[in-house]
Image 1 (cartoon, rainbow, N blue to C red):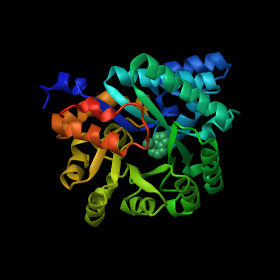
Image 2 (cartoon, rainbow, N blue to C red):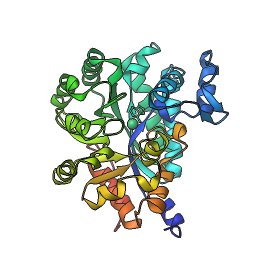
Image 3 (cartoon, rainbow, N blue to C red):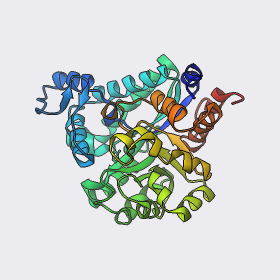
Image 4 (cartoon, helix red, strand yellow):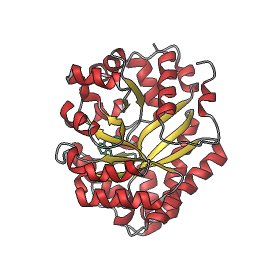
Length: 332
Ligand code: ADE
Ligand code: ZN
């Protein structure tokens, strides 16, 4: 399925699973470190264009170090603007950016300033490139339950029109979902859409636990649900959307190759999926590359890719958008 590369590139795309701090390239991280007078530790980069890490937990550590260079509202504006600009060049029309108030607080940035910086990047990218961005506020499992509940409360208190959802990232195997029920109850009661990282570094039981949290309508990854046919059937029946990031899964060793990835089997079972880049420079990918790979190695023809974009636009947590984004898809 390689002869349609130009058509895949031209297809409207939407991304629901990308971590804002994880979009900053080594080049941008070095630029921000210089701007803020931050000394970068030895070993953060494997080479000029590549972050260095060994396994999932080491990746999370490298991610936190790189994220600590993003210090000010202007930094967050620039990270946001540069990522959305790159996405627009690949045909993306809508992107939900997973942002962590904890990472802002760790460098002394207040929540309102943090989100204002991201919102400025969203507005500037929309004005220059027409792309629509929105924010998913995320807690981090391995920062603990009290921190997660605090992020939930602060997210609700922000009451920002661009903050449309809540997520939970981090170490799912070490920090089980049920402990975070209160955090999700807080945001679900306030009407935010909820998604949870699950079924990536833990199995189907982690996806089931995530689905039991209040308000959860999407799962970030969720691919290891494939190990439990009854769960796959439940996902399809309940129209739960999996935000699948194939390259992230292959690079982090969840699957040994694209050919071993369960995206085709999940689609065949009727599970709704979208495509995401997760932490693009860490995994050597982009949203455009995920669409191309899905076409070339994961059995998605052009109609399937258009359906994936439609699923993402339908499952996006933003409401009251000024434009009807599905118009981009025309008759597809
Ligand atoms: N934070 C950033 N990327 C992540 C991933 N792939 N899984 C869990 N937490 C993350
Ligand atoms: Zn993720």
